[in-house]
Image (cartoon, rainbow, N blue to C red; front, side, top):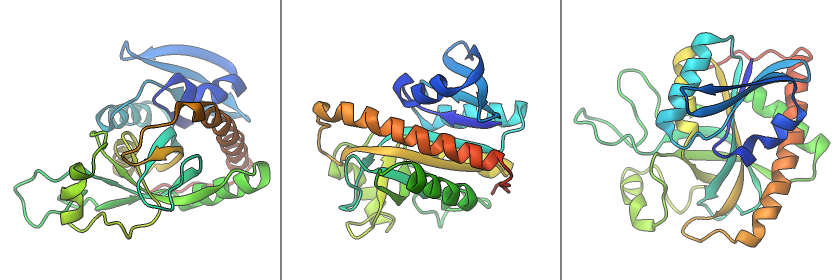
Length: 246
């Protein structure tokens, strides 16, 4: 099974429309789930996921109950670096949990969980390559390899980022930096269970700048392009490519 997670219904609407043999459930009496097939692959689509805490719990539930080979986060993120341009698509190279910094154990840095966990989690390179190829083949949408900083805090002010900068994990020289609030929990759950994961999101605005709601129709159009590329990649994976997990 391939699991697709989004925050809003808009994030996942394309996949719901394209799926066949659909059935609906409500997970934990709160989170809408659509089960079905996409290019003959078993797929589950979940929405209304807003924090790393919840994304980690939901991902762990699906991995425990089903044979999950890939978890994909879709939706929007906030561009921080100058090259993370609004209305482009950020495909994850790696992700760090940007608010893991309150532990008494030393040495600990931002994003580091002690006892064997890495500071950064890598996205699956095979799935990433398949997705980049699918974008090139099926769309004209600009996309770039991104480093996700994933936090349960929705960063809106520069001063919120000082702890990250002080620990040397985020500077104005970093490239391809995108903020989100759910991919870190997914990556942690996948790393613990050796399951592949990936994020592919629209950069909706630049950091500390309000979204231009006149651009929202453009974001929805990019959702369709992401849907075409991701659905095509899922079909390519189903045709014989093997994901080995992390």
